[in-house]
Length: 438
Image (cartoon, rainbow, N blue to C red; front, top):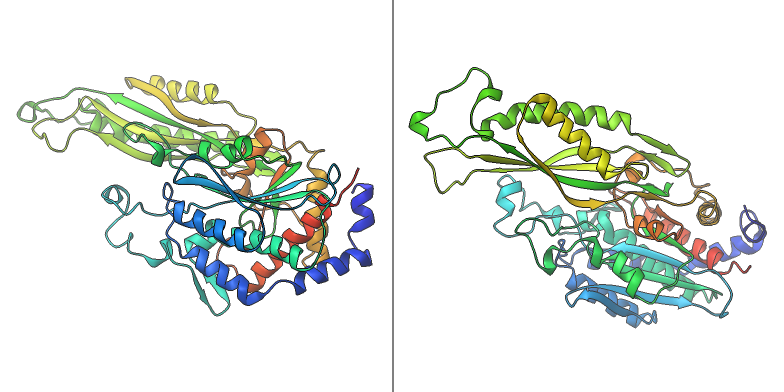
């Protein structure tokens, strides 16, 4: 631990008084109301405006001097700030969390992905509290932790705690997706470019550190996977149905709509080997790069009477910070060639994984761990590998060489106490970071 943090944190009575003041400034009922209200605003990926407007108005009422920064008018980042009480001194910390939640799109495309009844399940859009336990996708990912960062800023102000450096509190669209691919073009299909990345490059922020506020079960990670999405086109023959001769082996069938079955088997075998061969262990967490077939397209259902010459597999391949897209492309091409399939492989999305520099991120890790210990939760350990095996927006900051971690409350079904604790840890860590004067 560096000298300044050591002098302020841990068992130091002054810091424990800071933590106590922060906890006393957290209104549990207000936190609950904020989580439920913010979490009950429909905000599927691509349609984040209403939730963004809510956060903006909340920040405005609470004196966080918010502004909207967006690549497009209806999908904007909200940026609030407090502190900066000693210009030219103190470190700057940025909290980021995302407005979009994974859910159906509530249009005709949902029938491609969801079975009957799934779209009507209430947890997609509803935030609930029963028996002291929160539920609902919007709370879990990610407006529960977002509400905690908002309340952390309010608690610091309410407790009268000054910050030498600046604390930025942000809410971003586009973390989950979607992506501009194939016929899906236009601003509603823009993904991560208009979210945290646009906020960082166009939002007027200058952070020394960043925390992606998402559920991690109070663990921490500063490594994250990216992904490469591929379209694998399998070629065959379009045979008029009355002339079709069935083959004993699916691989010998003329239609790629049938040949795709053994190709899927070959891809699945490669995927299992790929995952095990590329597990990445680091001090900031373990990244396990998963592979999954996300979609299959082929043929034309309104013109029957024959098969198709093309069947396409859409494959998501996760990438650790130590991997490259080119090597994955070569591996997939080898799978097709070795199995004797004719076709074409093309990457349609590429987002690299990143990790923070181990030395430069220490101060942030120490601040969060000290804040956690001071709040009674013990020191902060490395989170479960699932939280370092996915995309989270700390990737953006590590890409720009700003040390960043992901940290937050219980991911699934957090309790009210979990959320209060997260507020306290976020606020106490911000106090430590922003008052760190070189």
